[in-house]
Image (tube, rainbow, N blue to C red):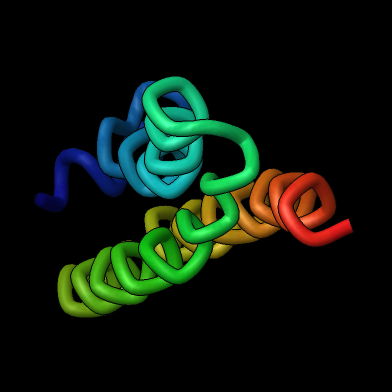
Amino acid sequence: MEELSNLDKWWKDPTVLISALLPLSIWLIMYIFLSIKVAWISFPCGLLVGFFLWLIALGYQNPRMANATIIGVAINLLFASISIYYAFF
């Protein structure tokens, strides 16, 4: 794991890409297969997945992955709030 954490560019690190894109992909899958009005529930799911990814990042002492997880959950919150607007207002 030392090799992955010493990569020069963050977009070459697969753990960063997974951590940043996984919560967003949960929203996207719900939006495509269900509807935008139901996709708001992806935030609690993304939050839970993000929490465990964050714990993994802390366990491997990978701060770049931990930061990417927080960013991914924040992006998920942004898209889920759009879904909340369409669902309840």
